[in-house]
Image 1 (cartoon, rainbow, N blue to C red):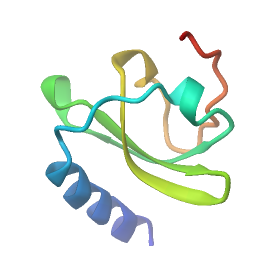
Image 2: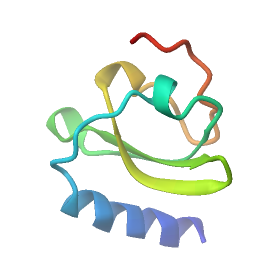
Image 3: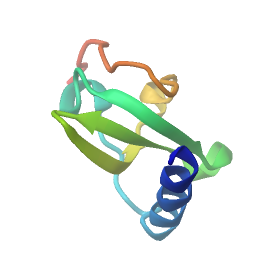
Length: 80
């Protein structure tokens, strides 16, 4: 199941690479990181997040939010 989610995320992310980054700590506070996909220095980091019982994917993160790993809960303060 995890492999399928990863493959689907990669396909979706490759199609949506132009997405605008989102502030994870403000928009998805309390969510859980299901998977993390990194496309190197210039491609950005995308997450699959379980938030309020719903899986949201792909979510492009700002550089400041790229320290989350699979299984982490989004719980840092919002810096808006």
